[in-house]
Length: 225
Image (cartoon, rainbow, N blue to C red; front, side, top):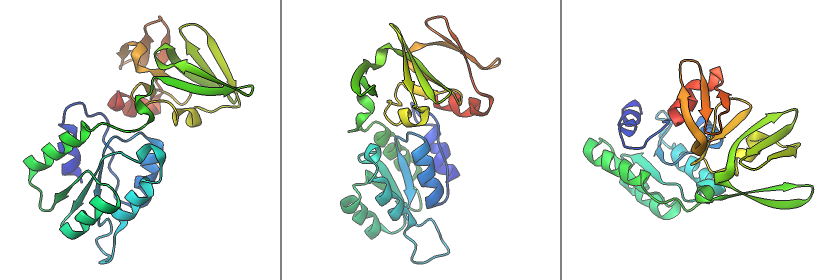
């Protein structure tokens, strides 16, 4: 796992790489983050000769709308099982054990460049307020912050208050290509970052505002950025 993670980190344009060794933690990680590529071992419990945890995880994953077309590479020594994955779970490719490292690197790089048929390429964010559905252009949203069960959207033109909203729920509809969480209460649009001060933990936005980076989120934020 660590070897594959290190190989992936060396590929161009790779941000954060998450490593887990069981189906439950893998699903939690997928729900809490926006993953662009999954490398999944078919057998996650080597002590169980009948284990197919990797298959079951991806089957569960395909039921989540945003992961319906996300590339999945299976890792296996059982080629027959890998071929079944092509038909049943629409996997991108498989890596056979023992690894051919150069071939593995090429497969990962190719998968990372695969077009995603999901909502992340959208340029409009839709939100509902007072029973009315509004559309807001992504490139006009600077950042979002939450306080007292409300979320405030700061844009180039106005400040929009969404009562009884949560950042966690809004993040499900925001394209992670642009938006990144820098603290428990703030999500910023990458398009408006002027520079990041890693030492003093703050971000200067193009409109002149300074946004603090949460201490507990600093490492994950910088890796994803």
